[in-house]
Image (tube, rainbow, N blue to C red; front, side, top):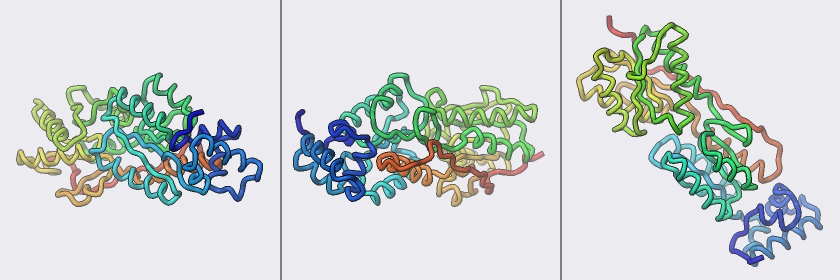
Length: 335
């Protein structure tokens, strides 16, 4: 077999005839592995990677852990990535980051490229992807962790996205709003946004209210998208008295658009987001939102990958709590 600079942990395990966890322990914690097994793993590493593999045998990381996120232009993913990197760096691993731009085809191409490069684990956002992508993941032979949403085939760190939408809508309904609008991202390839939208609809239906399609504005995840979505809803013959946004970034855009039109928030219009970005508490008015523990998602996802690599027992699915954070962008409707 042709040696390469950094053999994958999977390849070393296969060449040595041991499990992935045993190969990982042999390279990172040789003192807890039998001499016979350690010799086999080190021999396989040397055959595949030459002298560079000796560094790995002394405890240095291999090709790193890959995280593929939908976009680099969103604070929620930046916070999760920072937390992942801190956990992985402390454990002696590097983090490789790529973006899919919310395109399933791009995610699949990036995934294949990273696996071919020899990453030792993969962290992904969401659980909606093509059959082809799932097949690639199932045959990858490395730990895979999903975040935000789950699938029974892999480990996952999740939040209840349906409950997030429901909490936001219930808060507004309890204040007395009955005509809600929604500004969200495109839901076709986004299971997080789709679940949040379903939560809003279910909260309304439980009170005998509805959410017609013409009071839903799907937009790009940006401040400009929030402004455009808000403008579309305000232009309706009967505009909503309150808007639920799929993420805080869109909610901030709604606040800017309303204020640019002289519309008082929350006097004339209430706005609620989902995420609880740092800026949410410092806006004028401060943003009512649903807190999603983004940093903890990143920490837990990195922790699951490390546990799998080390052969340690770990939970298959970790669900983190969310909560409504009431601030000053929501109030009872006038009249």
